[in-house]
Length: 203
Image (cartoon, rainbow, N blue to C red; front, side, top):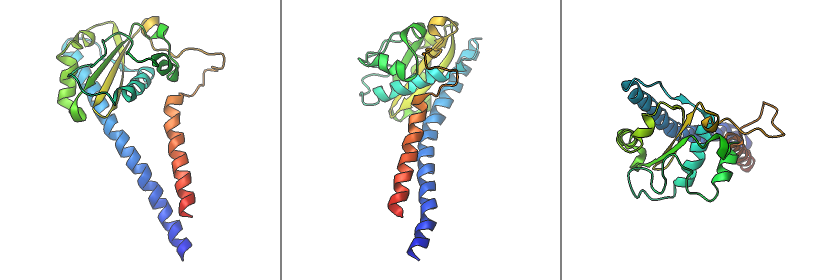
């Protein structure tokens, strides 16, 4: 009888963990998607082309948001970082490597961090459209965008159509054209391991 209840509860437990992790990710994803839509509406009002989502820029934005999340909100926009320059992290080259990028294919891009309590949507947009960042959003050279967020920080990474700002992944001797983005793959491994351990404990 006990084994029957364990077998009944295990799928419920696993499903609840998956749904919980998914809801947290969706909340951040919704804020990022809303910001992207709002930025493109802002650019449309200026007769500028829409920014296209760039997965590699998004990878960098995700990695940088994790670096920023423990920093206090010392001002409304971009504490300790100058837009369009490399963020002031000693491990910045390593962060680029996680997304298979390097300085040569990102130097024309722009990194725009903003810290907004609870990532309030209207305040987040204001931080980008009514600040020094508007100069970047108004610039016709930018064509792509990646957005990442953690806690109160949200990072926008802008890309260009030039080789120096394309954010095209760096080629390696092991690259066969079907490479896997490790930065996106690691969380999936983490969830699999967690669920595997949980299932063993319930047996």
